[in-house]
Length: 326
Length: 262
Image (cartoon, rainbow over the protein chains, first blue to last red):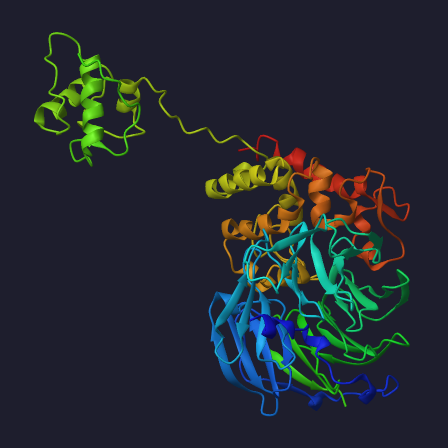
């Protein structure tokens, strides 16, 4: 267990070498036929989508208490996991993609095996829903944050199920990410604050207002230097975590931002939300490169492939789609 | 008369059709013997609920409790045992009347009171906030066409996702069931919402919780201002915490009026 957990990382952090994706390589404008809807829907909505590393598969989870594994080439469902524990709003994979860490109910996280769906370990201690999960790059720590006043930290090198540590956030948390050093943690709070902790102190070292409206969703770059915050009124702010300062706003989205992702190289971003549009952004210029309309009331989840050539998105009507970016 | 100490509680029912655990029967027999008026003869204290014990229970119910139809049975939380043991008769606490209580089901109201107790907030404030957010409908499916916000506290799409659900799943619930999600939403603010303004800020603008009433939530020009310009009562281009909460204050006053208090 210890060795397996030691190689866990957050889904977008399990990336291909950065050198293969030059920042200036802009994807061409996506045509309508660049989007392929997968065959099958989650009743009452998709919660999250992600690429399973190294497998040619994508995964989605929905409000219907199922997770589904999709063959990306054919768009067909290859495996279904059924049960309450397969309803989750985020997922972190091991680099090989054989294990997953997902939020459970009532403040727990589930660590499970992808081929069997079998639960390997349950991390308990939180008091309410933890929607965001992260694993430190050294594999020592797992963390969960959400509709709770604390962020919870589990020492994965300890076999004790009760080895939970609390980082005081004071209010609900939209997204979390470990420092690249694995010695600290960042969180975006729902009230617009961006806070920074050292893992050995419960109180944050610093909190700064990064977004002047309630946060809908947020994403961190895999190098741990930038965050993208999306507001419930459509504002998108790119934030420098080292300088604690706004880099730029990404102008053009409107309405509640529900889904965000920064690409593995950090050069691109995806956003989606109540304007029913998935947008691809050039992070360095702040310009929207292209977009595609989505079905349902809102876009609920977006994800980049490791090679940044395609994206997955899920919607509130339960559909899952693959978008070829170039 | 027995001089043995008598237990002041029984684990199950005793008498006609009762569970009649031996220790419970013994407790009841001793209590009856201590209370039974002369010239009735004392019961044998054997822990067996026979006909004499049942008749004695009925006699107590007829004479002392003035029951028109004695049932010969004693329940742990019933009036007969309360009389015998001298324990106060447990009375379920009366449900208080709350703002908008007449507009919702008894189950909804009871759940709001329970949730409010758990969260350390005034149930009138929570009802006023839901009255405002749901347009006085207390409907689980009422939806703002512009923002997609749905239900009792107008759950935003991003909020629904963070709670592991969707606005369509929330809309399909009964209002009573949706209150579970209201409680989950408010849980991080437990014991921090001491005013009507702060209860509403937890929904509209969490950054304003605990701030003074003059705190500016948003200003012109911004998307937040455009969507909520109706809140800017003095039309100065700034919406303060007090201005935003004034509409909810109106709902509190209205909900405590004769037509809606219940």
